[in-house]
Amino acid sequence: EVQLVESGGGLVQPGGSLRLSCAASGFTFTNFWMNWVRQAPGKGLEWVATIKKDGSEKYYVDSVKGRFTISRDNAKNSLFLQMNSLTADDTAFYYCASGLEHVFFNSWGQGTLVAVSS
Amino acid sequence: DIQLTQSPSFLSASVGDTVTITCRASLGIGMYLAWYQQKPGKGPRLLIYVSSTLQNGVPSRFSGSGSGAQFTLTISSLQPEDFATYYCQQLNSYPYTFGQGTKLEIK
Image 1 (cartoon, rainbow over the protein chains, first blue to last red):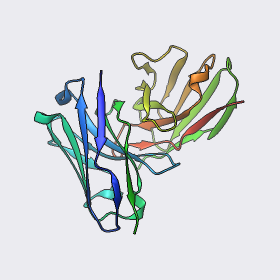
Image 2 (image 1 turned 90 degrees about the vertical axis):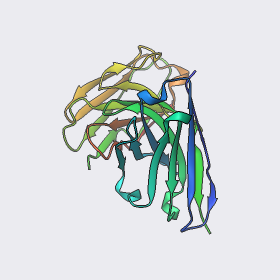
Image 3 (image 1 turned 45 degrees about the vertical axis):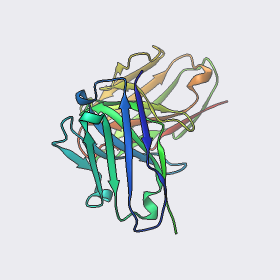
Image 4 (image 1 turned 180 degrees about the vertical axis):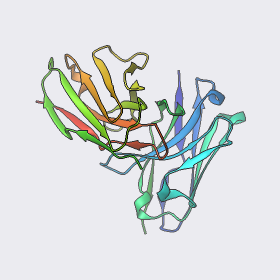
């Protein structure tokens, strides 16, 4: 069974940092691009970042460029999102998703909540 | 950036009905469009990709069509488990973008 389990969310003050993790199992991790998507409470989906199978290419939405870094550890079937200089606008549920470039996001986790507030 | 506009934003229907959701792109995106279903408290579920290909395990009452800048998701013979929020997503170019969502409610 395919599983994606996010962790690392929580309450953080504005300007703070947080590192999200996503543990993958049930599929060949290295065959898939990996993605982060966020959803503010009660709002729609927003794509955040994508990383190629081998980690050699990374893409970000403009609003997080220079603040967030996506990475992966293929030996540990894990995906990460380092988030710095957080603002209230970053408050959301963060989902990791596997996929193929330009095709789909085929499996999703249950999400982890990041709340930025003083 | 490519904007996706879904219509309607809210849809009320009954079990057994057939409904159609439209997704319009601000630029042509070929067939690089996917549809997702999301239920409260859950991550999205992939339904359809490259406009009309049904994901494994998704019931055949779901179908997609379109190319270029206009796409549709049709759900035939609505079942109780189909009442959820639906999103389209373009994967033609970065930044990948989603439509604003269509909430399908029971009439």
